[in-house]
Length: 172
Ligand code: FES
Image 1 (cartoon, rainbow, N blue to C red):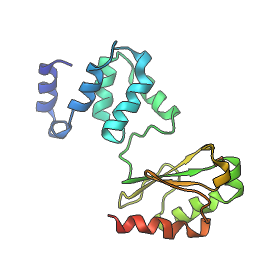
Image 2: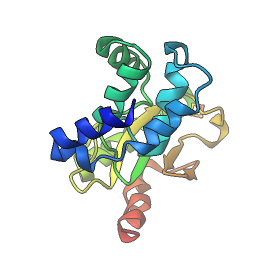
Image 3: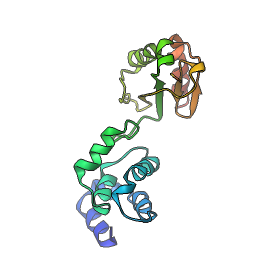
Image 4: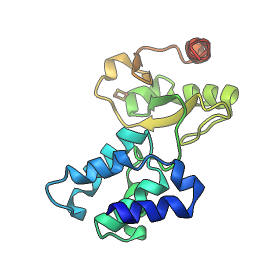
């Protein structure tokens, strides 16, 4: 995107004016080639930079990578880890592989829903937690597994899910 195009975008909408385009522009500039072949790693990097995939950043990718809106959102909807809405402060990942299923991963999800009123893919009202599931994390001996942000909980007693999560409320 040229400077002039950026200026026009910023002048036309106060909401877009507040958006920080520099991160997505930097990512695009670092690409060896502006091509849709790089779409998935680019989306992952954009999500890494913004914590999700803001519409403003997707507009830039659509323009720069010459890709259609339908195609880009089709890819996003195919990959469960890619998010188009801002997640909570902590992403909860509940492993739903066979070993974790047998050891009560459903109870973990139900407890989260009970307390925070969120189902898989949702974020609670206070934007503290976003609930996600993951397939086998390769550590079945520690089933059931819950990951909270960067913290790993193995052999979790599903009944203690809420006391584990409660400690994150205090960290707010
Ligand atoms: S099933 Fe959960 S780690 Fe393998």
